[in-house]
Length: 617
Image (cartoon, rainbow, N blue to C red; front, side, top):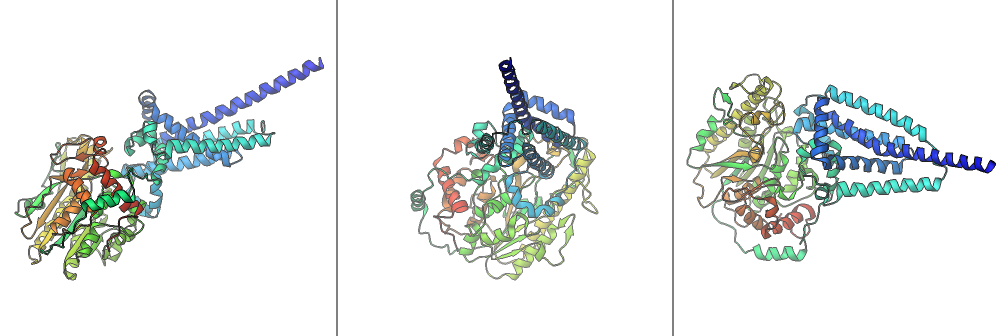
């Protein structure tokens, strides 16, 4: 009897232990699942809409939910591996996930881009970013955060229930913690850091879609791999020297006259007069379109690498001649890679005895420009802080003030001049009444009142941008020195109650049209007709073409393969490529071409390693 009683006690203890193991396992597996559902509901204004999306995801794109779940689980495992209390580990992980979700919610509201690890280096510009505005958190989001708190409270009682039930064996307990940590690291590497993470996970690598389907934390952690830049195949000193011998030549410096170059990248400059269901009381582009018909004027389109924000990426392409084609999405080299002197078209102008000036009518800290402009080789820089009593229009320094700064620098500098200017007046947000008066009224039967106000604000900025260009043309017509004046838009604006809804309601369809902005090139003399400027080009190619317009032919050898690449594919970025005949090319087919491989290893050295290609001083 005593023996049977002991066996029963032992069996009961085993059953009890199994019960606790099952409860712990269920808590371990279900907590990240419930947390995922609650976290992702934060970004939705309507809970029913969210659950409809969730059901659609489960049926059509289950890989997005699976990847996001395992990413949350991996991070929780890591915290459980280094923190004694599982509940405290869950709390810390949940706080981290919630912060990422809320920050991503606000960032996406402002810029239509999710929060990623590289944004942390932009934290010092937070006060500037918040100027762009946001719509506030929804009741649904508050409800979700309250439910997360309830989930934590429930998790506390579950962990209290199973606490110390299986921890008598400290050695086994410590081994379990080590296993948690190691498995968490392995999972995090596989899902978030591995070079093949997108292919292995079945994820598109499109930040907008990934945020929508995968969620804020999935997108954030999967971008951890961006910190590790993969060395391209064939990156060796021997291969680079082989390319050098192929493209290096003993071209003598061109003794032809070198004109001045003024290059303006105008904030969100675009021609929206073609909107199908909207009319204007007058054409906001009228003043600049009169210049289009002049003899020494060339117009076309830029294929921007960004939409609605991320100005520094087309700026990077323009000033370096390098391309975003080789970069991960939402990576901005100004903050990610450029931390010391590097080659650029600015240095090519310096090499040819130009005086180079960089002007930006916003704060110098944004995108780290106060340092980057010096690293790129500008001999002089001017930022908002350097302008005495600047003229404002709307929320920012006016385009008219930018024109005044260009003219002032042009007059004060002797010798040949390369002046780059980046404007700010027409930057988002457009949701408030930005101007005291408006020159143009908007009529539309498809736009909401808010959308019409946005478009009205934006249109006033376009009219002022055109007036700026007209002012510079008028000034340069009286200048004896040969000068080329170039202006283009960095990207299209984000307009609408929802993502680009103003454009969609007026004939725009998703795709390449969202990445096209106008360029205009004018000169006060007859430009060499042999300079071939395609109808659509990327900022990278425009940067190299400015050297052609300046009659600079002693390019650094590494730039010549890029010129060959852009000659074949004048418009190229990490989303699209267009050949010389205007055909859109499959990016996967492009990767196989020899010139593409050559330029990849050259860009890796110029931008990342700076090992084999010397910097031009």
